[in-house]
Length: 394
Image (cartoon, rainbow, N blue to C red; front, side, top):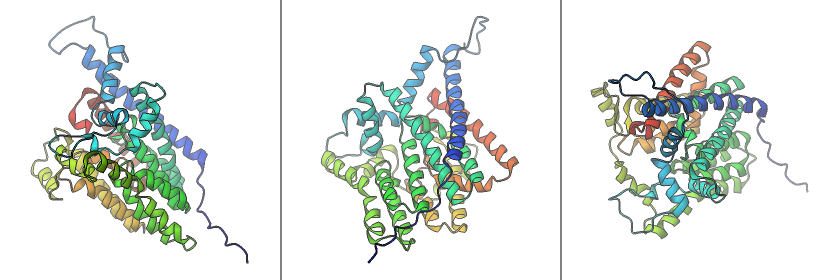
């Protein structure tokens, strides 16, 4: 009796096209981020106050003082928490939510950072280098996935929209955005190509990178069930493996704090204590002229939520209903925490939203208008992050 034929895989995307488009989007966007941040710091540190007159004043980019300031910003906010884990591990003490703790941050990114630090590379260099390399490869994987699901033109537009999104500067910082992007995009490509072992591996890594990463496990289960050639273990065991990163993190937290859900319960220390799903939009409509408040650029975060919801509707109409549900739950998790703070940062790593944008912006004038507006906002946000504005750091 002959052996069963191996399951057929889906189409293979064009690597060269993906590399070319990703390289263009990466270089364009990273130069914009770098020079906007450098110019803002240089102006703040080297230029006199408006009331003074000094004909001898000069403005020079990338002085030693400016580079020190940029390095300090790169290692601030969430990066400081990740670095504390990379260096010293998780805090070991009984759980309480009275003060912030590094239990909120998932372990895969600081583990990778720790591996680089072990080579002797300075923390800021290791973190920024890792983030940018992962971001480039993430763009390649996004392009390859959109190629398979739609076409090359849509893939070109998707990576540009992603790389120039107003909060895409986080992909150049030692936070978890770049790692999650490459894992998520590779998982979507694995689904499109029916590579169930690769999908299980990516789901495992995703659930050790961010809380929303565990959503890839049910998505993997649904996708494998649609393949009549998928075997029993591919339909059930592989998706179950996708929860392994989260379960391992919970076990680690249980040992360190006595609370396996410390990553969720500690969110109250950041003001995320649940609440109405509509109160954010009601507050926005009640006071639309309030642009920003501490840690929250309201217009950008609220608009990002609406963009993701529009992407959900588009995916549903396209017949991508499991993916539409995934995107909805992806934004529902931070949406339900009582604040839309950081919503634009969550959305920038939600790959299917940019596939939807690529479809909406199929006409060149629309695409150009969007990219120009988005690039201006990206430069503005990058400058404010470099200057330490709290709303740009969330």
